[in-house]
Image (cartoon, rainbow, N blue to C red; front, side, top):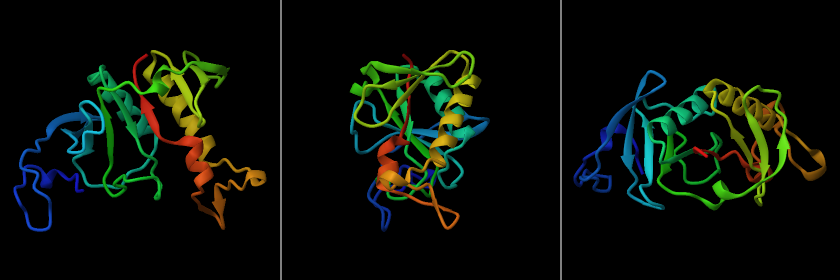
Length: 193
């Protein structure tokens, strides 16, 4: 599926499925133009795609976290998430920066915290969620502090290795992908609690 701006509203374009009812609403994230559209797949209520107007690859960085928080400020009744910026993570389009969200409450969002974690960032509470995969919930009202916390966790995760369970962050100086690491969980979901 193409999520490019130029593919909106197409009716039977050669080589593409008809998207004649697709419309993109413009919004601003991080001072740049992004788009909002409902997904044609509707995996949950109001399944939405937030896509960068500029066609550039997905990357997880500080701006990603800022964008995700900005989306939930603009759409407080939605959750929003991002796939990892690594291949083999799922059906995500890594060639075009985008996020997904919608009006849905996943069970993970209601799961209790089993252990608090001190990240050393004032104004942010962090806790391990009672969930089958490693999940950390961040709570706070200071956007910059939440972004700092998310960046800190992401940096640790990117460099995490545990040879005893065959998890390696790098081999021959290149960042690698292991199913074990993907299960550790760098699917980012943000929502208001």
